[in-house]
Image (cartoon, rainbow over all chains, first blue to last red; front, side, top):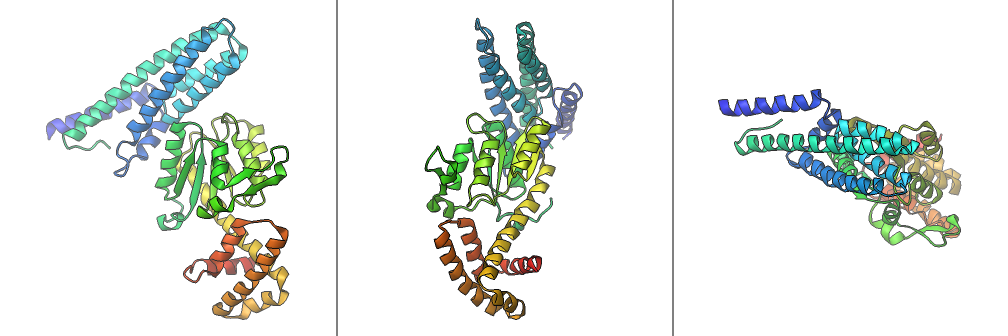
Length: 149
Length: 233
């Protein structure tokens, strides 16, 4: 039982750190509140959809920015989508980068866009691995018969 | 939550969003508030679900409702994203409000951007609410009054038509027993049917509420009907 308490404590601390360091915001809590016995995997399902969507969009953005003449409208539409889905799961840092990314799109600032793309890719891979770690910890606790919320 | 589970269970919400993440979210949000939910990924699919088809694209006034589809599912509220490829949420709102048979369905717009002109435009076009995304559970408390008011409005309309058909009927209804009111309703329903055939409106929602009004197993509709009278006089 001590081991279980320790695991739960670790999970709690890890989750708190993700909020404190600004990776996640209140919306992630909202997501967790929508998870219940009838939908035990809701958070993982939605976040997995987010990973798929974000990866597709990052590819599109990379492609669009490597063109000789850049279609800023199209670029902005992709960033808009990424901004929306990151805000829907509470991936706050990605959301913030998307805001400045869109400004660069509006200004047709290629340098700014490229910089934002690098930032957003970095933030994405960080939050992805953090969330995967979080889910792994939860899984471990559940497998040992404990509860996570 | 603002309402008992058993109460909202009967309400059916059509949610429209091109993002699968946001569809999942709004579906869960609504379901945890005990709504029945259907989600679609575009405005045109929403219109299809509502049974609205365009006969002639050059003339938006020739929209008509395919009764076959519309009769199968009643939609009590439409909640739609604003920014969607193809038909936007604003376009969808306009189509619904332009349709004589759908315009009574309350429409709520969701958007991730807080653009005042956009919000005003949607509200002016007849949207009931404008929710900023991500939509929270607390936002959903604002849906219920619109659904209820619309139900009441439908019944008022229905009552009004009856009054137009027979002034005496109106006076009698206030004194008579409920059984008699039911009989009167049946009579006036025939009048409404004739009227509607003349007008060729094909207003399914109204027809539906008339049917609900006389349905003997539905004990909920009677007090509401009385409410309708009360507001009228």
